[in-house]
Length: 405
Ligand code: HAM
Image (cartoon, rainbow, N blue to C red; front, side):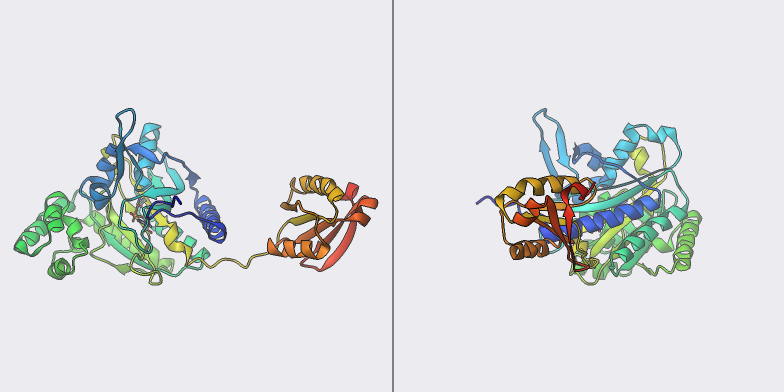
């Protein structure tokens, strides 16, 4: 039997209800914040991710689903959504147009990671990207939107916050950090040795415990911010306080993608095991120019849908729509006609096999229908349909001509 690939899952029945519930809740909230849906391709040129997510990141360095297509193009399945949205933004000249552009999206992402609970090779993100606002109020808006989505789904969280500085404060900090790393000598791991040369700040995020112990005394960027970054970070904290969103400052939060500057944040859950990040995001003011666009401030986030699935508190399911069945083979034709009429405004599910009334009532229960509508010999003779409201527990006989007119 052919099985799905490792780390790639089907989403079936009850789980799909959760998935759909998540998407409709998150999309409704994104629209309320003034965001518009954007769809970008799953397959992009590999260069897009190398130039945005960054060659020094694990995502690009180790985890890409990359291949040469039949036209000899170097392509890969998207490992995340931001790069594609930025490419579309630049390609369609929205950067030249100016103004504010706010997008939301959802769909599958692909990373060739070692599968485990909460870590898949194909997973789904819901994300938003905002272009053209350099005010830190937009950073706060992102965090408030994630908080709203999680609240609507009944999901608790901890919010981790950091500032990654900008081109004014980052270079001097990077020098300080590199001399600190060098002072650690050969005690650091091979990955950190590589990071020291490519993107030193990523050492702070190293999962190796020995490295972590060494880095407790490392200089922290948060204490080396320039005035502009410091003032934005202070304002962000004030806005969050005003909106009762609690946060922890995490000086080691550097995020796994290279494009961030200034605000970086992660929402974590303590109830889903070691892969605890349920959402992440931040500001990426330089990315648009890295991808040949006009410099444009930008900020965004993405939620990992699979990691949220088991945490979602579903609303109590309500009976809805019609279950229809014939008690006599000759009654199937009017049943199908009745179903066609219902579907113009409501849900209708038909059982094709003639069954007893008791069996049909069971069938209606099974699909959680609000109404059970049946035609048997008597109803046929009277050109009518028998309908039971399974919530109100009332029954009625309705002339077919008067049914859903
Ligand atoms: P990210 O932190 O790499 O950020 O991913 C966002 C979320 O996707 C994570 O917090 C996690 O919930 C989920 N996720 C990541 N990898 C996996 C995996 N292998 N299996 C299951 N879930 C996973 C980004 O992707 C950025 N594009 C976010 C962003 C948007 N920043 C600015 N705009």
